Length: 268
Image (cartoon, rainbow, N blue to C red):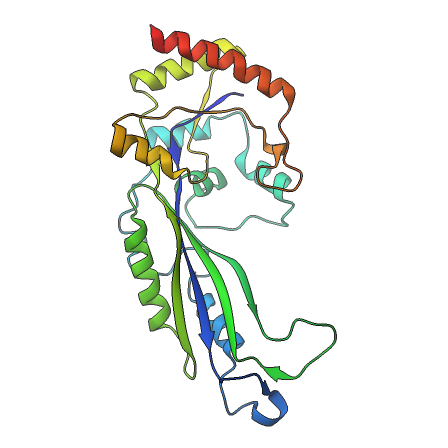
């Protein structure tokens, strides 16, 4: 089924470093007398979510634009069971996420806080009884309309500092950032895109909010004052950004048909 994505998620990132002793210590000598930075980091990261997976940072959801009724209805009518698809594609034993939303709604329209990487202490073979001097983690926050990256970072930093366990210090470094994007699929260009997709693939297009951050799309709007059409050609098994990323030639040929159709529609 061809797709027209009228929304992109944004992202903002940070890295945290939790520091304890000035050097790695022998746990048999100092264990129980000084805080372990790895334990402290684990405790700190655990405060980011509640048991349901909802982000626990105060104010995190204040600006989130609620889903429109037509969006939820349109997504429910898609000829794909989103929950089953996620289970199949990921291989997880069961689904998990914010209560009150199905998998499609969580993925396409809800913000998240993710722990992308974590490290610290001894990583070699066997055992080494040490208390590490520090531990680190990389975090990203998915942004949805109307969240602002700078504000989310400010809220996240305040949360991390407020919940920092005793006996350690924290250093927070900002990472990359990209804004969200949302346009109207029922606008003139949105309708033109749907007609083009129908002509190219002989099927109605699914209206979705799928797609990671593409910061320049928002800049096209803010600087040039133009909207962007995002018409999907990749399939779920194209494995975007994976080692085995692929793109079938028949999809490329479909893209050629689609571009011819959209140029004709826009020209009219």
